[in-house]
Structures are given as structure tokens and as C-alpha cells.
Image (cartoon, rainbow, N blue to C red):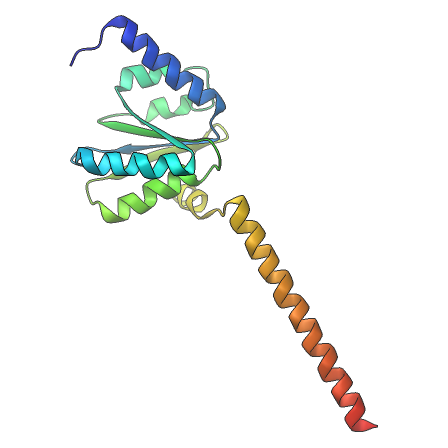
Length: 165
């Protein structure tokens, strides 16, 4: 289906608008992945605040011009699926990483965070970065364990003191 100029302008402006408000972006080659699987991926992404589009490379290059994601132009080729994370910087990368493990034809080709093109190691680190809720839960767990440890230490010190007296 050929797009006319007006539809192309709408696509470019939508992606440009998302690019200006997104925290990070990840692109992947989705060649060979069924439409049903892509739709399931998009549905999972919506729950996490990840906005996805399959866009022609020329339109994507125009849409990300003068944004923090302009460095993606260097690596965009083939069938490109782009995901923008709007709530948490690692949510799009985490979603794509999990999908890549289940689908051999799906390949993450790059990611951008804070205007910098990420290496494979940095992409994995971004995917492993905990969300705000996960970080708070870990902190509370550590505080709980720490408090319990202090209580046990205090009780054992009291017990020793009573045994020696």
C-alpha cells in the first residue's frame, strides 16, 4: 500500500513528537516475525508505556532529525521496528530482549539513551535496570533484613550478658 505525501507527513510528525518526549529508544530487525507476534509485542508494550512503530527508514530518518535519537540514522537499515520508552528508560529494551530470547529471527540492532548510541553491553545494562517500584522494593527488603539482623545481634548480646552474670 503506497502512502501519499500527507500520510507520510503525519507519520513523521507523530514519530517526531514521540521522539521529543521519550526517555530511550530501541530498534530491531523484525524481518520474519509474524504479524500476530508483533501485535502481541505491541500489546505488552502498551502496558509498560512503550510506543512502537514499524517505519520506513527514510521516514524514520526524517522523524528523528534534531532529536536525541538522531544518532540512530547511522544504524537504521532493513525492516525497522522502533520502540520508545516513555515511563522507564529500560522498559522498551527489556521488552525487546525478552522477545528476542523467544524469537530467533528478531534481532535488536541498536538503542539510544540520553542521546548516546549504546553498545551491546550497555543495552543489556539498560534492560537490567530496575524500575522505580522494583528499586523501592529492593531498598525496603534490604532495610528489613538489616533491621532484623540488628535485632538478632542485640538479642544475642543480651543473652550473652545474662549468661555471664
